[in-house]
Structure formats: structure tokens, C-alpha cells
Image 1: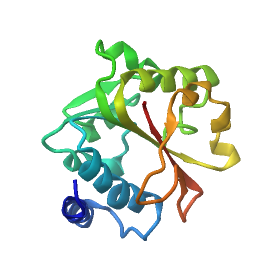
Image 2: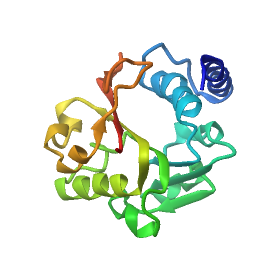
Image 3: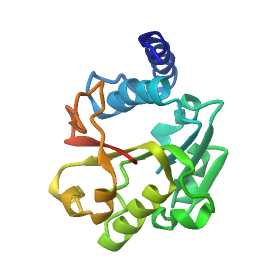
Length: 195
């Protein structure tokens, strides 16, 4: 894969943001980082065939377009959010994720953004969820976890999540780190890879 493919994916993602985003994104703001830095790099350099996006809100109504032509699954526990999900959408708590998939090592890319601390708050459910993500992620698959690093929205320190220790921290090349703090709201992305 070369930089030409990355530039192509950046242009594609930027076009979607311009067309569908409900407000102008600033550089290094959380949604800008996800939509115009993380997604293009994942598409260009990892080319995932199977994707799981955990948690859906109204502002994510256009996220399905980023992964057209690929197998995209979404999950959210609120049935009202199903209309923002993919064709393959599950209405359930993320801690029950593995109950919906028989095949292990299925997903090439898993995104869990704005769920930890926003509903996924209990230690046992956090461990169960991260274990399920590990089991469902393919070898060399990428897991991106977006969360707010503020006390009232951080149910536990990431270092205390035992299931995360199964993953290898992934030094995400465009951001030059395995953890990136955005300019707004203390929103943070952590990058992991399954060996």
C-alpha cells in the first residue's frame, strides 16, 4: 500500500464529512480525528473486510458510508438508535456481543467510541466487553477505543482493565502514538492490535 491510496481515502472521507457532518470539524477535534485521520488510514493501510462499530448516535448517521462494499456490523442497546446503524445491526448491550457471533477472529477492525463511561460503566461488563472484542478481532486486527478522560466519565483506569492486557498497544502512524488526546473535551483514542 502506498501514499496514493491514503490520499484517495482521505479525499473520500473528507467528501463524506463535508456532505453529511452536522457542523464544521476543527483539526484534532475528536470527530475530525476519527473521520479524517483514523478512518482513512484504516481503510488505506489495513483494508478491513469486516468491521464492527459499537454504539450509534444520530450524528453518526453517515458512518455506514465510510465502509460501503465491506461487511459492517453495528451494535447499540437503544432500539431508537437502530435507524443510524448498519444493515447488520444488533440491539443489545455490548457486554453480550459474543452471543451474536459464532465465529471467533471475525472482525478486521473494531471501533468502540463514546461507550466506555457512557453506559459501559461496571467493571464486570467492561471486562466482558473487552474480552469479547479480543475474541472477535482477527489476528493483526485493529481495535480503537475512544473515551473521555475526565473523572465523571471514566469508570476505571484503562491500566486496570485486565482484558486490555491481551492486546498490544498500536503506535498509530498518523498520530505517532498508541494514545491520542484530542483538543476538545479530553476525548482520547487508544489504539490496539491483536497479535
